[in-house]
Amino acid sequence: MHHPRTAKMKELLMDPTRFGQLRTVNSIFTFAADPDFLENDIRVKPDLDAHGALGDAGWYCIRAILWATDYQLPNRAIALRNPILNTAGVILACGSSLIWDDGKVATFHCSFLSHLTMEITALGTKGTLHLSDFIIPYEESSAEFSFSSNAGFDELVTRWDPMPSKHVVATESPQEVRMVAEFARLAAGIKRSGLEPERKWPEITRKTQLVLDAVKASIGKGFEAVEIVG
Amino acid sequence: MHHPRTAKMKELLMDPTRFGQLRTVNSIFTFAADPDFLENDIRVKPDLDAHGALGDAGWYCIRAILWATDYQLPNRAIALRNPILNTAGVILACGSSLIWDDGKVATFHCSFLSHLTMEITALGTKGTLHLSDFIIPYEESSAEFSFSSNAGFDELVTRWDPMPSKHVVATESPQEVRMVAEFARLAAGIKRSGLEPERKWPEITRKTQLVLDAVKASIGKGFEAVEIVG
Image (tube, rainbow over all chains, first blue to last red; front, side, top):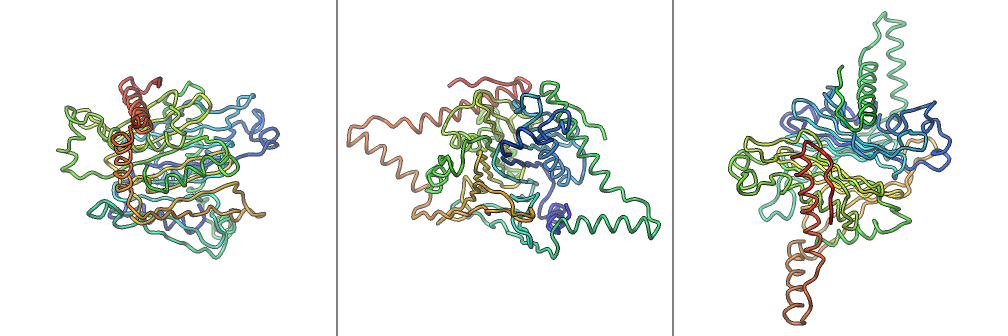
């Protein structure tokens, strides 16, 4: 969220000539937890962090999807069948589809049982954004993403025209430093300048949790659609 | 299927130390059809090619998923809600989840209404394969894919260690030429060497169609799970 890459990507998503209207987002966040984690971590204990992989890894997928939609809540969540639960009933892997009444759809998959993977693909009517390291960038000093716009093929359909472009965004400070700086800025605004608390961060946090709760409820109801009300 | 990249990727997927066991596949194939296509193409006419985007674009997604599972049929297909149909009821965009009884899951999305996108992500317990041009490679003479294996982070969790590796596979002939050469080889084997027809291609074609039919049936049945029997 705090990496300068995020703002750069949003600029492209907001461009009607290069990206058009958002239609679909797919997001994946998984990591292969070790046996000790799967036995003892608070995230696999029903009386500690009962949301398991959904609460830990799915949270990032949901946030990424909401980010792409400019935080427009989906109208419904329908969890995908066959989530994997541990013996205490905590989610170790699951997925969901999210639906907006205007025709947008999204899917995500999260897991403690697959190799480290962090994917976002956002599809518009005129462009596609893709990146494979959306939570922790591959490198500290800069981060990449790929963007394709108004693409087709050459005459013989043997190559793309134009090719997707690779964008590299440098950062002087790691994203964690930028997060703390943002927090300090907001706190200083309240303490020193008499500003009201900013609404953005709690609002998108609450929306992320609303979607997460709807996915969990859908699993509980046998994969029925669960309405999301803001 | 006929590009040498495909065999190279399969080698990695079959490697238990680098990829582990396959857990999840996600595939996307979409293109933004022009108004003339959406009005007049045989693929949007119920009495011509009634499978619409599922038959045209979803076919490739299903084949890619079957390829990753070594053509092990899923046990069930459950179409995702809110497919987009034209006024004649032909599918313009849809998605599905596929489920194997051993815990593997897959999802795909296909559409005539989103920008040109061709994604596969295959997640194993120890590795991740990703490519964004799985049907028509970006370039004619070589094709890339990204593979990440046994990845984690550095001590301060500011970068990946190791980074995913980029693989480039050159080809002397375009994949279409290789397809025709394969067909000629098989025909010559029957005509000149008295060989039986090879079973591989009709078998994987039939399996692709079985899954496609199950997804279509699931849409017809209000997104219920549809059993797939080989």
